[in-house]
Amino acid sequence: MARSEGFAALWPLERDIAFLNHGSYGACPREVLDVQAALRAELEAEPVRFLGRELDGRLDEAREALAAFVGGDADDLAFVSNATSGVNAVLRSLAFKEGDELLTTDHVYGACRNTLDFVARRTGARVEIVPIPFPVSSPDVIVESVMARVTPRTRLALLDHITSPTGLILPVERLIAELSQRGVETLIDGAHAPGMVPVDLRRLGATYYSANCHKWICAPKGSAFLWVRRDRQADIHPLTISHGATGEHPGRTRFRLEFDWTGTQDPTAWLSVPKAIDYMGKLVSGGWPALMARNRALALAARELLCAAAGTPPGCPEEMIPLSRAPAPLGIAGAAWPIPRHRKGLAASPRPRTASRSRARLSSLPPSSWASRIRVARGARRPGRG
Image (tube, rainbow, N blue to C red):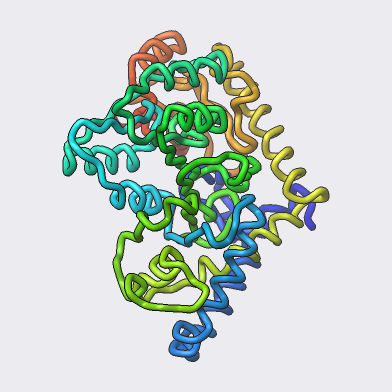
């Protein structure tokens, strides 16, 4: 569709910024935003027709396209506003009791850790945190670390498909299989996965999987999904209980009825997902596989540059690097690298430090705190705030 140097013009991002932090909120191409704008115009022209008569069919079409992309059945998918909402829906639907253990790792996304703690306080359950070393030598280390903390009281494991603070692909397929053999349900936080790595929900076999479409699929913000294994759908409810709790619609499960209508809102982000999948799949020759491979090659090249500048070895084997992210080396603090255009530089500490001091300091911190200490600044070596 476009040569590399022309990609930037396809997005409405400020042209004087090299937009590196795509994983936080995503960025949507102009053409996809145009589709959303057209949908919103239809909605506002006749809200009753759009929401009251046509929405079910439109959601069905969007869900079918998404299901084909992530390897699932459309009937097992529910649209939500973001991956954290999906995680909340699961954790706040399930009935835990005192003594139950909820397992996660110290690479867990902070918002999801907060949800675990909230549910544990209400129910008397206990959150068990598995330390995962970083740097990490192999996926085997992660599997062994997690499984070593499973007990007869472990009810559920919340695991990241791709970790937010450290950018690692966790061996979730292996973990899901081994945890299932021990009778432990799995909730996968796939916030960064769709569009970054191939996702096949049927093959993964998780109990629950929540993920975003606005990050690497590049759909509009507010588009995400929750996948729930069919035998568990009766127990999972949206955060807002509305007409779907009692309404009837031939051919639709209660799961679909409840999640499809939680009150008046703008559904155009969800309805734009098929366009985003199609658009991004045509961005380079070879489709989505080629786009993911291209992004991964860039991530590996970035890792090589960062590690060389920081004087530190890679933090993980290549097989654990996602197709679009490169885990930052521990020596990143106090070093600076040029970024194209006018704004450049990486700083990660209140004052410049040597790489060795930075590695020692960061390695003493939990992984969840590293991300907040790495920022893009205006100008190289600019001190950050403590």
